[in-house]
Image (cartoon, rainbow over all chains, first blue to last red; front, side, top):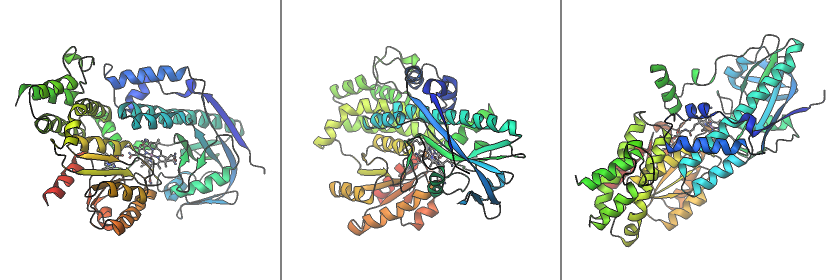
Length: 236
Length: 223
Ligand code: B12
């Protein structure tokens, strides 16, 4: 079977976070705070930009999933996804390997702002970029679900190298599998993507696949500042 | 405490930069860190006293609130902005030697890693605590650290890594730097790093947050 990259493009205006979403993410809901005002200003500016987020996926047949070994093979390419992710993917008969980027704008700007000592502004631009690429990937994820539904197939959450004990270095395998694509994302020898605001990973496809609780709910990182935010929100 | 310095402390704590800045609302129209620092200097208050009695304690207070989860990154960054507005007027006295910095801290995110939010916070807080900070940015190689140490002999070094894959680059940097500068002390930090790991790779300390880092640095001075 020939591998095909399904491409999706979204104008930034469609995938930028809403003000509320950004405010919650940064735990900054004081509408008079300069950080908040800057969020309002930049979101508005970015909404009228003509840049796009671009991403997509390649679907391949799953050869085998070995949960205990934490391995999964897709059309002859083996991934060391770790036991946890392998468990989540064990019902998959096919898998979509995906890439998506919000473009270089966000990290270029954050870099310039940091260099000028404007750390607050850099932090906000950086966060907008992080949420934008996730929002674009949410759309692609939904498009994949829609594409598979008529075939009676369901899909899993998305999982990325660097998470849940899936070694980051597996990015090299992932990029090798995905092959030629129009996203323009490149990989450094230490497995970091450029542009920085990019995501990559795998989504399982199968008749018994399902989405499950993920993210902060299952994370064990005790020192993370986002955990403190979640705990505070629960306490309120 | 001197009333002017007390006011300056409050400005830095809440991020009141200058008279024109509308934030915080309850201080609207009042003077900010910038004007108060100018006034203090004009009144003959020693720049070192401004540092020790207003700027440093204010940033310590903000750092403490961050550690306790009472404020988050944006609030801390705004306080740092107010502090920087004040520092603009104090900095000339650093170079003239009238105000002594506690020492120099060279910091960077290790090669292969691009996470810099935590490192930037550490930079600002350590500077606010009265140190000269040399920021080598992200993806910093051992060679960069060696170069910076050549320029700033006697400096302490901080390494940041957020990835389990790049944590190990900390050891590479420590080893290479020690070949050239055997006495340099290293503090390591970042979410995946622990005190055990720090000991394993030959670092002199591990700090969970900026306040911790400052305590370690002051400990080195007093050792
Ligand atoms: C924000 C973030 C990003 C941002 C980075 C923005 C930036 N400019 O830095 C973006 C979105 C770009 C990013 C990207 C990636 N990330 Co990331 N990211 C995070 C996240 C959510 C928060 C980090 C952060 O900024 N925290 C806030 C700051 C204030 O805290 P901190 O960094 O821990 O710093 C504090 C202390 O640690 C300490 N400290 C820090 N450094 C130092 C240094 C010294 C000397 C001292 C004393 C103290 C100290 O002081 C700070 C203040 O208290 C973490 C998860 C987490 N909770 O840590 C993941 C995380 C670090 N990322 C992770 C990964 C895997 C990635 C990617 C590689 C994923 C991928 N496959 O795409 C990508 C790389 C993208 C690419 N281009 O290749 C993983 C790493 C896991 C691992 N096994 O290594 C994490 C842990 C998420 C996870 N899986 O749970 N990421």
